[in-house]
Length: 180
Figure 1 (tube, one colour):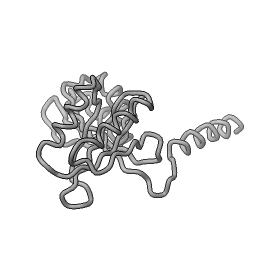
Figure 2 (tube, rainbow, N blue to C red; figure 1 turned 60 degrees about the vertical axis):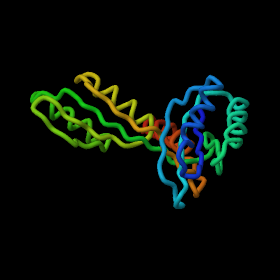
Figure 3 (cartoon, rainbow, N blue to C red; figure 1 turned 60 degrees about the horizontal axis):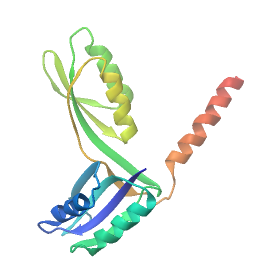
Figure 4 (cartoon, rainbow, N blue to C red; figure 1 turned 90 degrees about the vertical axis):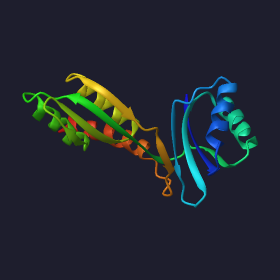
């Protein structure tokens, strides 16, 4: 299972290196990593996606707390949160299929950030599922390059789990449609 860890650290040189070293020594992979300033000056938030079972993540959390400059480690995998990624894609876009690509962008609320004779660079922001879906659709045109940020995530203060709502609303809507 993939776990999302939110780690608050003192903004000091070498913190990220120590964290990466800890994971490397234990033979664990970091699938996604995003680092940036947090709400408090001098503190950074690191969001990591790490594969492993609950016991493994618990051990990694304990090991992280042993490192200097670590302020807080939280496994937010099962906590209602808002998750986003940014993806840039360079796509082949010949004049005859450009309008079809632009139609796909509208559905995903993506935008064109650069335009050349036969290529477009597109910007997509959203959850990881949205990234996979738009990439799959654009593969038919020819994706030349991709650059993706790691996942960033914040715990929802409302505690509303939109994933549960989405799973509840869609099946109910399907049954409503079939009745009509």
